Image (cartoon, rainbow, N blue to C red; front, side):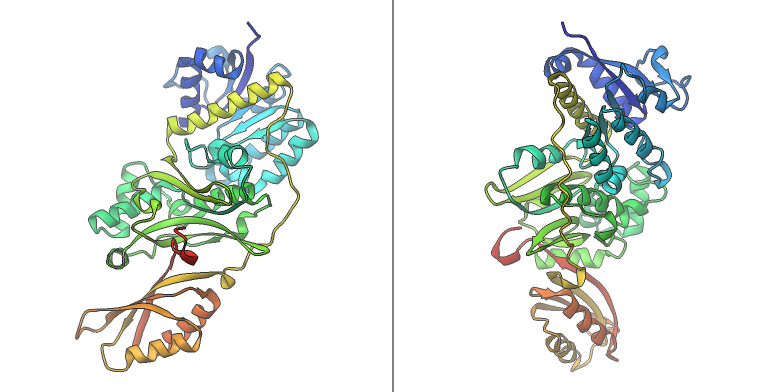
Length: 438
């Protein structure tokens, strides 16, 4: 029997507890898959006296992360603290310290990987260590491994995914029950899906971190989180949901990454997608990532994107990979490629659009609006008027593909028309580009 590989786990919260359960209850199975036994040697917690949901020997508990990281007898460090309060510290410092020691490091920390992934991978390369981060995106869905390993024979040209469970749960409730945004947000908070401060989810920050990581891997380039275009779901109304259904669409918060000539597009925003698209059927708190590669064609990865055991499953998979690599004396697959492909400004992106306007119901209004569209190169696919004799009534438009800068100019002119009360919402339409179903 080979000697056990000793693990240092930093954090024993929800995910850390799940990891400990898998390693304990499935010890024999994990050992067989890792090429030998694994041992939880040290666990860093805030309060060693706190009652736990998992049976951990009190002798392995401690409060000093750096002491564990610097222990020469612990070759694998598992960081599961996250970024409380939104700060990447002290997690970034801990990860860098472990990598400088040449250790294999496993993390579920999307914030640190998205913001400092290049720095971490460069440090790993310089000191002989490895970084593993499957659990940083989409919980139990093995999308990182799929992109980095299973799809290396492909040139991936598009990723499009639902990678925030909170907003997907909320949009599902709005769609199925006709409820308003504020009502479903309160319900999501009551059920534990949304935080007291829900801005990371509903404003699209969480999804932006995740698509930055996926795009960096898929396109082999560095993607800065701040360069990801982002809109949240706070402006989506029951009326928009109903209009989408009437037009044959479903509203989802999508994270999208595409190659576009010498540029890449990376964006997060509410999206109308056809009811026939595979992503349209992804409901509640589930996640899914739709991928197109030149050799494999279309793939979709679906499952639970958060929660104790799905995320712990991804962490343990990385631990097993790290143990295998350690025993064989090799490093992980993630590397720095050094390229920085420019990101296409959102003003130059091309899409179809849903536009909901509120106007005075009188002759000539539609003609004035369509003239403004036409003068700015915006071609209309469909027009629907909602209501008669009211003030205002809704005029709903769906455009053909158009550059966003053209649409912005048209909408600025339309907003100045005396008969237009407001342009109440503009939502991109995806899923049917160039005749392909993605």
